[in-house]
Image 1 (cartoon, one colour):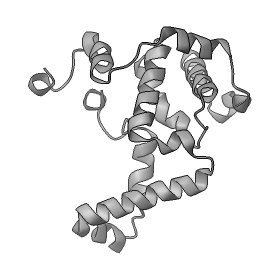
Image 2: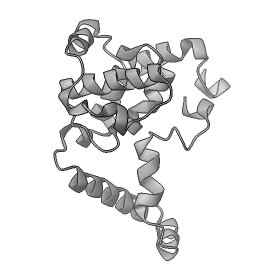
Image 3: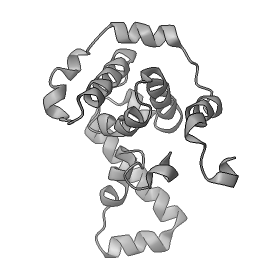
Amino acid sequence: LLDRTGSYPERLRFVAWRWLLCLPNNVKAFEDLEKRGRHESLSSFESTYPIRDRRLQRRLLRLLSALAHWGVVESSFLASMIFPLAKVCGPDLRLSFELIVTMCMHWSRPLLVSLDEKKHDIEILHGLDACLSHHDKELWLLLRHFDVDVSVWALQPLQTIFAEIFQVQAWL
């Protein structure tokens, strides 16, 4: 279906994501995290992340609180990373939470365990720079020639899980 149409039908998208990613659908565990309320590390959330849509802002706060209670260390870009998922998943916070945890566990595990955020960000950027240098030396040299640092071409797309780079349908 994905090969033929280029995307999953909107009405089946979340079912496909749940199935393909083997999401646990752990209702009780998520409810337990939600019952704990706002995490103390998010006391200034509203001023740090001003969002016009109050429902979306509350949804993002609830997700960040659940992640913090679960043990994810707040980083400078965690809110930016989960914002697109909070937006597209709508009121289904458990789906958003399980998608985020699955992504972190499989593709960005260091986000879950990093205590030294600056050092961690530098390590990620260094690794991406080395990866590009290895796989596409010509592009890497061209970017170097024009003083395009790895933080310019990699950090922002990673922070938003590519949601601001791709068109909505392609990203979904």
